[in-house]
Amino acid sequence: MGSFSFWHILILAIIILLLFGGNRFSSMMGDVAKGLKSFKKGMSEDEEERADERSRESRSLPHNQDRPIDVTPEPRRTEERAARPGDDL
View 1: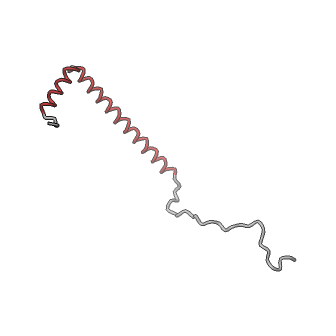
View 2: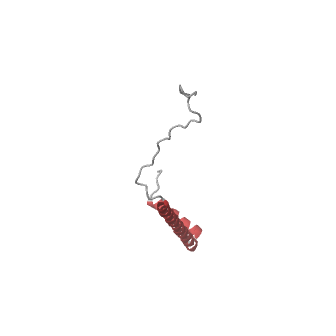
């Protein structure tokens, strides 16, 4: 009762064709196909741009990437020396 059978879908398709007409329905499907083609073309162009950016970035990186980066902090530098015994002279 709640499901569509083959006959329901067939009758619905015939009604849609009668409402829109064969020519109009065909042109709508052609427009949908053109839209999909342009969407795919745009996506492929975006992927090509990303690949170009990656190749440019890889060329601009320094060649010494094999060496680890030195992150050892420098010792603190004090402006005044701490007073030591015997420095009063």
